[in-house]
Length: 384
Image 1: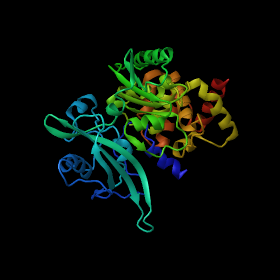
Image 2: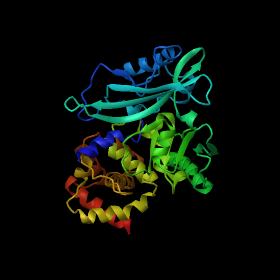
Image 3: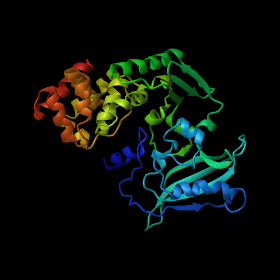
Image 4: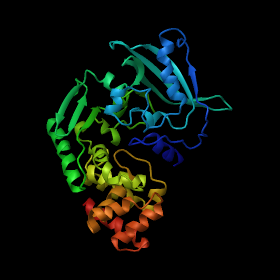
């Protein structure tokens, strides 16, 4: 279960501030090493490498603007470093393994970087990520730039409603499914009384690893499940990998649409994910399609409680995520009892499980001891 908690940080579903992983001690001295065969001394490599070295040494955050990055990309993406929440998680050792001209791109260079931890005892190297950024000439200066628009420059684009779907040219596009996802944006915004996002860019491939590679993340520990999605709400950006439902992965779209609703609230992570699962489904399935599997799991684990789920959620198995699905049902129950005001109260209850569950019990008009029985009964009814 400890691995589950660590993985929850690694597999961030939304763009989050820099996080220190369990067991990682913050080190104020960031070391930027140079790999074999990488020249950072000769011109123009020295000048090109300088903004990247400066950026890493400054311990990047995920929200601050910086003159080191492309101004045009900062206008497009407020949180301009699209890989920030993945690769800057308290690690202090970065090794540049490649610095070369970018093939097919004028006045642009490619930098590949490995971020890893090294144990003091056995000197074992444990990589977190291998990723790429670009350095491009802009307004007379070398600035950092993202891989995503460069690696997908030849992909297909389809704009339906507020969503622009971007996908490999070899990938079939299911327009009917995309139309339903586009309609979902406006209907969800109306239901939660928030302004719909003016535009969402939705990248998808057959698997999440492929989509993240297009964003520049060439290695990252995703585990064996390659179906999934990530969203970056400030950037109105969705990254999806699914061979069967690429255009219909609405969980991540819900993150973007409901970002204004949750802004400023003290929301627990599982409550947020439960809200997105109730409204947008999970693992490529609609909310109701998740419930038979959830019921079977709960029937096989009669001692499992909401408190234990929030404290130490069971690992995801295929399309079943007990934490996401279980909290989705709780969100639905709270909404049915008190509408948007009740959901807002639940989302603002704080991050501690007892605060969330006491609030839920109060909103449902039951004692905390009765909450689990009411929750299990509702799941059984919905699963039929």
